[in-house]
Amino acid sequence: MDFRRIFGGDKHREQLDAISKIKQEFEKEDKIFEKELPSKYNLLQEFEINDLRNLCVETTGQELPVEYYNDPKYGRTEITHVKEDYVQFLVDELILSKIISYALKKKIVSKEVLKKSSNSVRK
Image (tube, rainbow, N blue to C red; front, side, top):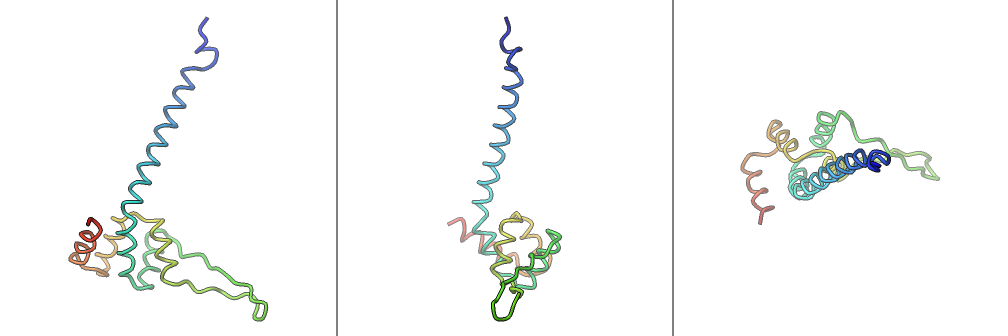
């Protein structure tokens, strides 16, 4: 009697292999994210808030969502986004190479600044 065929042994093995591959891909992406995090953050600090806003719209196709505060005295008030809001959003959404190419294209930073920042991160 072939129990593998009855209980789907080969199919189960294929599913486990697929899950394992997906897990490895996630772990690989997490390592890349952690490695790039300081460089992305430092580079985005060189941007002005308008540059960050434009980067959001041009690369992700969206503006940061509007947030509101319900003030008991004045009612519903829109909260203005600050630079750090954009930086945090972009760090999560973009890979380093995309930020670098945008910064160079828009002449936000020079190649020399990029070399200095990448050298300081490696140390």
